[in-house]
Length: 317
Image 1 (cartoon, one colour):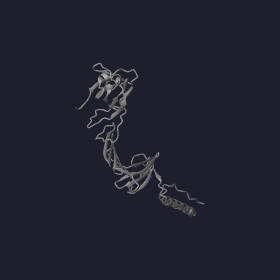
Image 2 (spheres, one colour):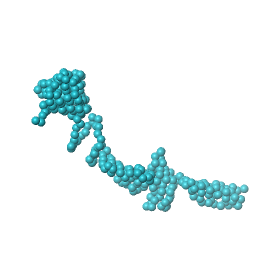
Image 3 (cartoon, rainbow, N blue to C red):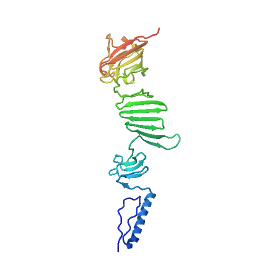
Image 4 (tube, helix red, strand yellow):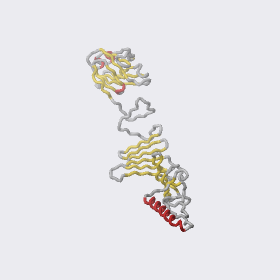
């Protein structure tokens, strides 16, 4: 009895009948097998299952969809297995590729954009755009925040409220930067700044009657009142090591006490502050009842401080 030999399947989404057997005894088996093959094709089409193929069609038509293996069949040259569509304009587009948990969307040429929108009022949406040949990518959020990446530069634009930030890869700002909060530099260098309309924070030390420290980390402009007539030491602390530092004191009744100023903590045994006329205590240098302006400067990070009474007994009468 003759037997029907199964054909090797070339596709599970397209049906082509096999050749008729040469003997009539195999017609029954042939019919059964062909019906099975046809049923499988219809099932795959109903579930939209595409066969993984390793051949790129010679004459594709716009709208053709293939699942290429990315190795033998790699129409866009990205080496990625995935779903491809042939578009008008004679090129394949990789519409979705899954590779090691990463979703890749690749176009053969031209600009590429991905938009995510939940279509709900007052909800965030995201649009990502990559311009062909410009090494530039743009991210839009709610059409208000616009982030641009191009070469070694990053640009951020927000239209509500309006602000613009354009930064080179080495941290240089291209446009004016408006900051609504403080900037902490953590003792790092700020090179070649040019300030317009700047102000300094004034720290109020309060009223002192015994030994204490003037802490430069509290600010470069401070106010101080002394009283009680005591004799004690005042230290100047937290100067930035190996750098020039200064602090200006707006003092009240500084000469009412006999205070000696020291570089470093008041009890740490540091150098006394250097004064131009040799006097080194507040009762000799400053007024006992009035306002003085005194500046302390170091050129070696706080090992030595130099004192200057910029104004003694300040008055406007």
